[in-house]
Image (cartoon, rainbow, N blue to C red; front, side):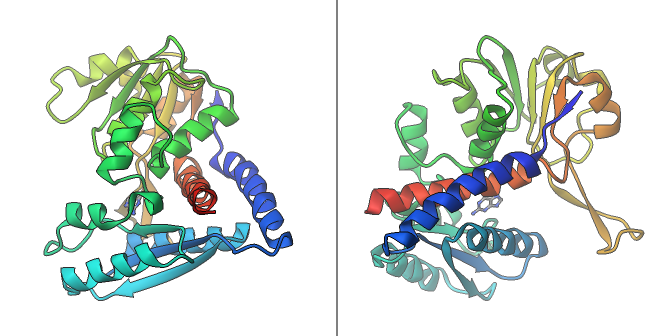
Amino acid sequence: MLVLDGKIASAAIKEKLQQEVALIVEKKQRIPHLAAILIGNNGASETYVASKVKNCEEVGIESSLIRFESDVDQTTLLNKIEELNTDANIDGILVQLPLPGHINEQKVIEAIHPTKDVDGFHPISAGKLVQGMQTFIPATPYGIMLMLEHYNIQPKGKHAVVIGRSNIVGRPMSILLSSNTKYGNATVTICHSHTPNLAEICLQADILVAALGKPGFVKANMVKDGAIVIDVGITRVEDNTAKKGFRIKGDVAYDEVAPKAAAITPVPGGVGLMTIAGLLKNTLQAYQQHQ
Ligand code: GUN
C-alpha cells in the first residue's frame, strides 16, 4: 500500500513555483499578488486562509488578507471585490466560503472577474472546464489531479467513483477524471445523498474519491482490493485529548481501508496540502495572463 503524501507532492510543486517567482523578482517585474477575503471568524476558515497566506509567502507570492465582520453588508463586500477587480496590482481574488447566511454566495462568486477567479468557482470558469478549455480549475480537484500526476497514476480506462457533487469538489472532479487529458480518460460515476446502492457502486471503483464531508463514512466493505482511495474530507471532530480540543477526520475510515487499498491519501497530510498547491498554481497562471 502506497501512501499518497501531500507533503512530498506539494513541496515539489511549491519548489517549482518558488523558482518561477524568483525569476520574476530577478527581472524586477511586478510580483504576483493574491487577495483573500475572510468574513467573520469561523475557526476552520481562519485556519485555511492563514495557511493560504503563509504558503504564498513561502513561494514568494504577495498576498493581502482582507477581513470583514460577520455582519458586513453585501454591498460593502461586492464593492471591495469590484475594487480588487480593477486593481492592476491584484492577480487573484478569493472569498473564503462558507459565507454568513445573509450574503448571497452566488452573487459574490459571480462578482469576481473571471480573469482573477483563482478559485475557479465563477460560472464562466466552470463552463470552460466542462468544455475542456483552459481555465482556473477549483483548487481541490486541481490538487488531486496534481497528486495523481506526481505519483504517475493514470486514470485512463479505470472506473472512478466520486462521492459528492459540490461545485467546489465533486462535480469538477468528475469532469477532470473523465476529460480527454493525460490524467483523465476514466469512466466516472458520481454518487450523492440520493444514490440508493452507494456501497455497491463504491465497491466497483478502481479510483474512489470521497468528498461528502462525513467523517469515517467510507468503510473497508465499500472498497475493492487494490483501489486508489482519495480522501477529501477535513471535518473537525471534538476530542478532548487533542491539544486544540478537536481532531481532523477524513471521509474514509483510514485504519480499516488502507490495508485494502493500493494507494491512499492520509488526513491530514493528503489532499488538503494539494489544494494549496492548486491555488498557488492558479495565482501564478492569473499573473501570467495579466502580463
Ligand atoms: N471553502 C472550502 N473550500 C474552499 C476553497 O477551495 N476556496 C474557498 N474560497 N473557500 C472554500
